[in-house]
Length: 61
View: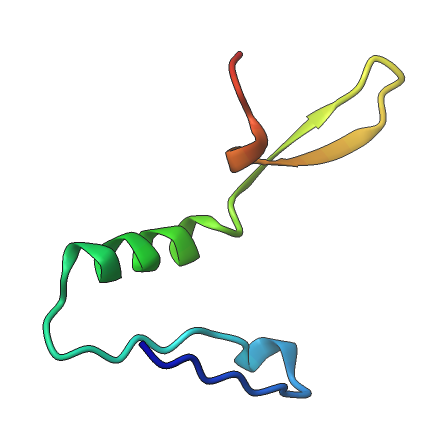
């Protein structure tokens, strides 16, 4: 599998391109990982400080 990287100047144009012959389970997992990577939950500490926690870092509630 080839990996191509490009650095760009505009954060609005950041993204990932998947190129495949057949959409396999591996590509589906990569796609789901990329989609969920930016998800986070905001909350407040006991000192009323706002914090953002990535959902992938949450072990349990």
